Length: 151
Image (tube, rainbow, N blue to C red; front, side):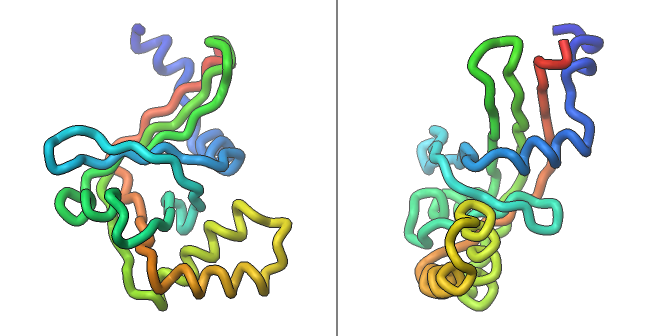
């Protein structure tokens, strides 16, 4: 793809924010000990302009990120070529495992993805989750986006 075409489908900053705000699931890639890529799908939230998710502290993702903090995340949609849109962010992961700090981040993820549940119940769930989970903040290094509806 020529640079002109690449430039034509790149999302603006506002389009990136709008696109990520409309997505619910995020593909998360970490590096396993043998160098292979470990992929999973998680809910996420945007906190201070950065992608945040939480996962079990004993999960393979967290084990991988403790060993090597490099991370790639992908949000995408579209079923035919002309409608394909996506954002891939390469970066490093900041791990947050203090339950007092995990709690508000878990609450952000829960309230974003389950707005139909009363806040009081989400607060209780986030508090319970915080004791067994680690929050991951994606510190972006490189962001690549595409929106084929612009063609």
